[in-house]
Image 1 (cartoon, rainbow, N blue to C red):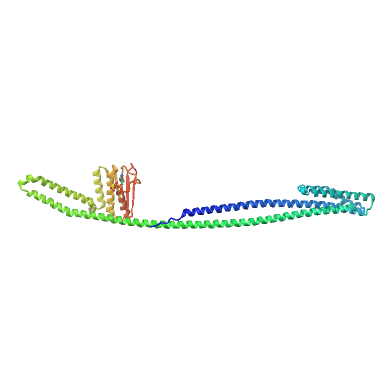
Image 2 (cartoon, protein in one colour; image 1 turned 180 degrees about the vertical axis):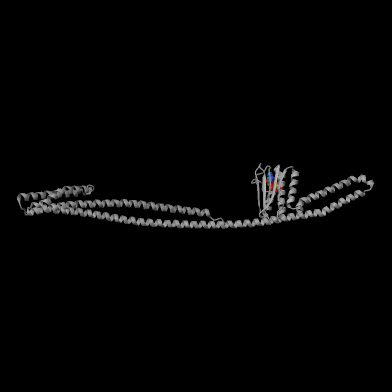
Amino acid sequence: MSTSAPPRAGHDGTLGKRHHVLFALGMAFVITLLVTNTTQSSMGLEAVDGIRSQSEQIDSVEHLLLRLLDAETGVRGYLLTGEPVYLEPYESATTALPKAIERVRQTFANRPSDQQRVTTLLALVDAKREAMSEAVARRTLVGAQSNDLVGRVLMDETRQHIGKLRDELAGEARASLEQSKSRFGLSRTLGNVFATCTMLLMLAVFSGTRRELELRERIATLQASEKRRLEDQVALRTAELSDLARYVNNAREAEKQRLARELHDELGALLTAAKLDAGWMGRRLPAELRAQWQERLDRLQRSLSEGIALKRRIIDDLRPPLLNEMGLIEAMRAMCEDFALGNELDVEVTLPDSIAGIDEERSLALFRIAQEAFTNIRKYAKAKWVGLSLSSNDGLVTITISDDGIGFDVAGTALDRHGIAGMRHRVQTYAGRFTVESTPGQGTRIRAEIPLP
Ligand SMILES: Nc1ncnc2c1ncn2[C@@H]1O[C@H](COP(=O)(O)OP(=O)(O)OP(=O)(O)O)[C@@H](O)[C@H]1O
Ligand SMILES: [Mg+2]
C-alpha cells in the first residue's frame, strides 16, 4: 500500500513569495503614480499662475498705451483746431495715467529681468507726457503750429516698445502653455502606462489567486479521496478481523464443547466403571485380606470420587452447564449467586424475564463477558459491591457490570492483556458497542451493547 502526500508546503512557499513580489510591485506602481500626479499637478498650477501674471502684465501695458493714445488724440485735435473741447479727453487721460503707470510697476514688480525695460518704457511715457503738455501750452500761447514732430517720434517709440514687450510676454505665455501642455501629455501617458501596469498586475494576482484556489481544491479533493480510501480499507480490515475473531471464538467454544462431551462421555464412563469395580472388589474382598487392603481400597474410592468431581468441574468450566440447560438469564443469576457466596460481597442483579430473539452465540458472548468481568473484580477490584444488569431494548441487548473497587487508569493499561481486549472483540464481532469507564479509587463500569440477530 502506498500513500502519496500532496506537496503542499513547497507550493505554499512559492505562491507566498510570488504574492509578495506582486504586492511590492503594485505598491511601487501606486506610489510612483501618486508622486508623478502630485508633481504634475503642482507644476500645472505654477504654469497657470505664470500665464495669469503674464496676461495681467500684457493688460497693464496695453491699458497704459490706450490712455496715452487717448491723450494723444485729444492733443492732436486741439493742436489742429484750437478748440478747448479737445482738451477734455487729453486731461481725463493724463489724470488716469499715473494709475496706469502704477499698475505697470506693480505687475512687473516680480520680474526683475524686465525692470530695465519697464524703466525705459516709463521714461518714454514721462517724456511723451511732457512733450504733450508742452505742445498744448505752445498752442495756447503761440497759436497754430504746423506739426508736433517730437511728440510723434516719442509716441512711435513708446508704441514700438510696448509692442515688443507685449510680443515677448505673449511669446513667453505661449511657451509656458506649450510646456505645460507637453507636461500634461507626459503625465497622461505615464498615468496610462501605470494604470495599465496596475491592471495587468491585478490580472496576474487574480489569475494567481484563482490558480492557487484551484490547486487547494485539487489538494483537498485528493486528500478527501485518499482519506475515504483509507477509511474504506480500515473498515474492510476491521470487518475481516472481526470475522476472523468470531470464527476463532466459535471454534474455541466448539472445541470446548467437544472436550466437555468427551470428558463427560469417555472419561466419565471410565471413572464410573472404575469406581463400580472398586466397590465390587471391596464388597467381595476375603475376610483375611480385608484388614490389609481395606485402607487402600477406601483411598482408591476417594481418589476416584475426587477424579469424578474434578472432571465435573472441568466440564462445567468448559461448558457453562446452566447456560445450555436453563438459558442465559438463569445462568447469569446462578453465576452471580455463586460469585456473591464465593467472594463475600454484595451482588445486585437486575435481569429481565426473558430476551426475545437472542441466539446461543450471543448468549454465550454475554455470559463470557460477565465471567471475565467477575474474574477481574475478584483479581483486582477489592470491591464490596458489584452490580450486574441485563436488558434488551430496540433490538439491542445491553449488559453492564459495575463495582465500587479500586478502579484503574484505562488509558494507561498495558495492551498485552487479553481480558478486556477479548470482551471488546466479542462485542465488535456483532458490530456492537463496548465501553470501559474507570477512575483510580472510584470503581469500574463495563458496558456492552450487542444488536440482536
Ligand atoms: N474491575 C477492575 N478493577 C480494578 N482494575 C481492573 C478491573 N478490571 C481490570 N482491571 C485492570 O485492568 C487490567 C487489564 O485487565 P484485563 O482483564 O484486560 O487483563 P488481565 O486480567 O490483567 O489479564 P488476563 O485477563 O489476560 O488474564 C488489569 O490488569 C487490571 O489492572
Ligand atoms: Mg482479566
